Length: 592
Ligand code: NAD
Figure 1 (cartoon, rainbow, N blue to C red):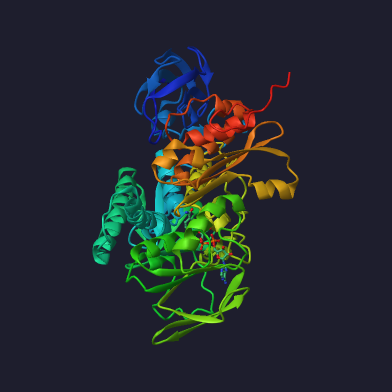
Figure 2 (spheres, rainbow, N blue to C red):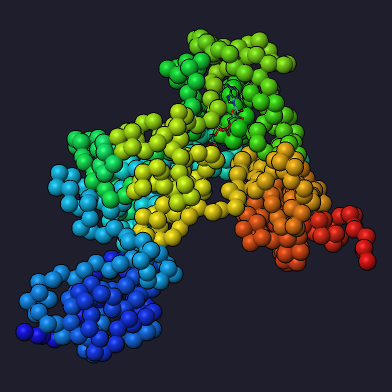
């Protein structure tokens, strides 16, 4: 017995109004059940819609260029075994990597009905389980949900956003802005304007900072809700390659997943020489709590966190000493970029001891007695508080990775490939837990890659440069190859440096210490950049784009930059290499 049915677009997840790019059958064609009927392409995926039954194609109800959503008619089909057609469920569409076209090598996206959703003992089933909700984790979760995946986001703390939003980047930037205003108001006394000494209400400042964090974390929770991402609060650990157990306030919950993304981050390194049970010893989280303004603060570690928090506490009134193990502040950054910062903080801080280590800290009622070892450092000194900012440790050894067969190195890092895949083919890892640099913007970028691979897209991490910024005063920012790295690797380069003392905009801010430096390889392409000065962190972005776009000196020099801005200094540094700069006297003689 035969019957004519109308074949409609099945459930294609969150995709709507998707373009028909190919009609794969013609009227009169005989088609098998599950044979492809039409191809759809969105900016995220290409999918082929299969036939629900075998039969003869009748009238085509769509053509190339039409846009369709779930339920729209595709064609009529005369089905030879009507009973079979009536009982056959609409098969799932086949998701292919965008632009991949049809073919046997196409990657299939896992759909409802796969392993996790059939785990009857699980409390939560997810196509994608994300462990950790920092900038890496929430970005991965949101992107996966936008690609039609059923996502659970597991977070041990009550608010999502991880270290960055709750106890890192965002609250520190709120306090650094305060420090900037205090420093600028102070500097204005020499420009003819006096504001007087600031009156600091620490609880008011803390409440404002907390308000900024709350707005951000509340906004994220809203974004998760809009995307129907399930947030599960509790500490998660793998118990098998397909399951994570989560200790919640409501007991243990089992999450079964098809694919997982580990985004469990890092935490401050805690060396045992510090008496951590004494509340006067702080890590970065404690320092951001602003419990008081200590009269004398010792910052251990002259890296990014130490120098940013030193900026805040100095502006609030502390006498700051910085001790750094290596022979300079911000190791890894070119010395010429650090020098202007050093010159300023040397005047502001009580002492800066480089090439010095802390050998012991004794908690006494009147303060913390710290013993040093290093050239020029005193044997011991007493401080009211000590901030330990000597780096962060990844959380790889704390998530039961061994139960899932995920390889973790002895330091706690999880090795991954450029699809952010671990050694286990359906488990990804991103962010601080996969290695340096431990930066939010790197984690977010990796999160997108992992989510896209989970959805069957052909994505991989191939950024040419990850910018670094110290939000100190002045800011220091760099990206790509540093000059020291270029020298060590024997890479030949041309350097263009523009001193901000020649920038009208910088002088009008009352600042002249800045510098912009660009490095071009022998093929004339940009290979690295460094900027020191107010807003260097904003300015570095242009150079990252230039490097991604393979810019040469002319590309940057012939791009009209607005005047008067600090951004002009990037253009002028390129002009120095190009030999066309007129805002400095550094002409190159015509060669021919
Ligand atoms: P870091 O690695 O940037 O700096 C730690 C510093 O401590 C180094 O200079 C190191 O030489 C020094 N040090 C180590 N042991 C020491 C010892 N015993 N005595 C004295 N000095 C010692 O680490 P961090 O500043 O703690 O930051 C941690 C991570 O967080 C970094 O990966 C950083 O990139 C990231 N972070 C970035 C930003 C930003 O981008 N603005 C802000 C905060 C944190």
